[in-house]
Image 1 (tube, helix red, strand yellow):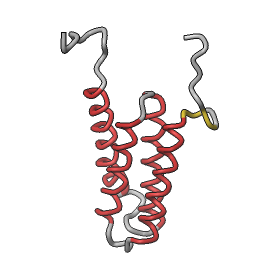
Image 2 (image 1 turned 45 degrees about the horizontal axis):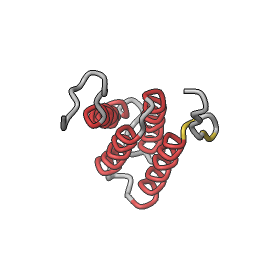
Image 3 (image 1 turned 90 degrees about the vertical axis):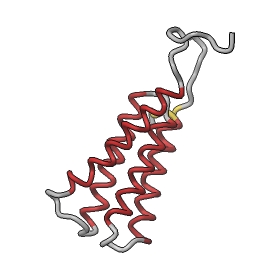
Length: 122
């Protein structure tokens, strides 16, 4: 639509920027508060954060970017703290990617396409 302007910051939508800030904040808090042997808790907090970001961001391109950023931040968190080895980090990233898919699916179910669904209530 002409005249419709979405506010951006560094060529990102504001929601994606907030999601990126949230991911980095959660990773820093995970890295400072939790012990290195609490890998499951670190991975679960990052997975929940990525899932919430995927559910809240409307633009699919921004969801992909924030989800990939979440995977990179999670991998960096786990490897730099010597919690897992470099080759084993892939197995720990699978739940984070799955939570991004669940978050996007939740967004899809919450906001159906108005052209294909029946208006309710009539």
